[in-house]
Image (cartoon, rainbow, N blue to C red; front, top):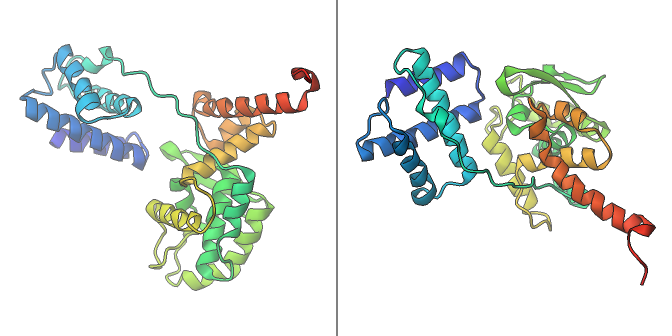
Length: 297
């Protein structure tokens, strides 16, 4: 539908929405339009009851999670606001609809011993092993999103300061920091493996086996191959290393506002989910270390 195509262009070029958000919104709109077509409904003449039945359809027929339904509503609310701006409708019917309560899912993260096993797995004697080792170290050391990681260019890195200029959500720049472990493997990779892999003289730091820029999907595939070589039974994702970065910072006493800035979160509420994990950690420390927390029987 032309209006949807125009809306996606608007999000991309005027609102600077992230690639992930745009893909999700486009998927949600396609689901919505398919439902309207099946039910014989006009998207410009919706009743409140039509929307409620649509939400039931998402929950019962599509088996969508509450979080996905809320995102779907957000996509549609934004779409109808766009239609208002373009004088196609007068009121946004989705402004009066609230989504289901989101499931509270605690972020999954790695323990220190699991990370050590992960980091020792890549063979740094090979070019791609050096690259894979750097991916692990950088994801954990910086807390970057995988989309931010694959877009790092060598010129973005300040070796003397151990910082990286990162282009985050909404095309907003921030500075990411990394430490000595990441610096060591970065130095090895740039002097050896990177020169052998980067035969096309690309400006990006991470290159795939086709000698082109590494993709987000490529990073996930690499991590899946790495974890299969370990004794770790958890499923791995790039975001788990980001979660580990945030959780371990808080466990070590870092304040939440600093963690928010390091993660590149717009709102402190996005960072607060990690406090639920660290609260459990603090409770365990309290009962194990504070002698008067429990009676000796």
